Image: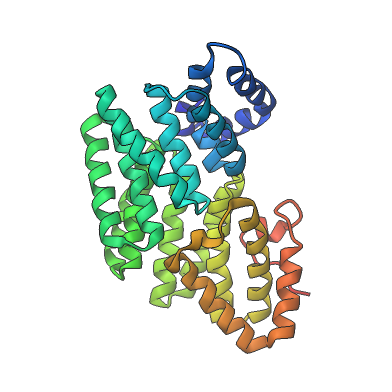
Length: 331
């Protein structure tokens, strides 16, 4: 199941997991209520990281992981995995206060267990927390540390690729666009060689951000739309909403303020299913804030709010143009 997520079977793995979700929920409930099954519950909840994170089930994943971690607190490899996975989920929800203690516990447990692998994942996700908090120098240190650990262990999967892309995000936010683009292009080659599409889509987001920053709006639009199309395949809400926020800015910069307002409204609805809007991050919020200023300035408050409300009423199921990475018609 988890192994199928990295490679040519990624989309098929999503469909199979989605089709089997009732059985997986039943298995988790059994493991967390039947005597002697708590370790199996931790293992299953952690193994499903790709489903919780990559397929739009952050809130549900956190509920299962919270329950599993509360059920069995003894040091174990299964608990260490569940700790870093839940830390990852919490970070994407913007709950850094919950994430950091779990990741530090995972680090300490890895030392007790004499296992380097959970430590690599914990260091990686601590880097994510620093990235979203805007501590870019520290984030870079942690991502490079994690990538060194992954390389020493021979680990290569979607998480490892995401660490490379997150390192590119650090470069982009620090203004080193050439480095960000080069990191993404190198990572894309690895993705294409292995048939990896989910992490590949986040490289497209960074490339879109870099193109937008450089003023190449048409290229930015192409990358952002492709990012949305890929992530809609997996129903990855984070991977859908981030490029929608960027597309809204691109519409505003192109003089299409009505469409920008609709896209911002659509993004707000998606964020409500993810957690804290734009992770509470200054740097991820920057395109949103600039777009709001431009669109409000062009439309006035009343027209902007009307477009925003129309967008907020959209769902991914109804918004066919939205799924295709194209702005819904504002009227």
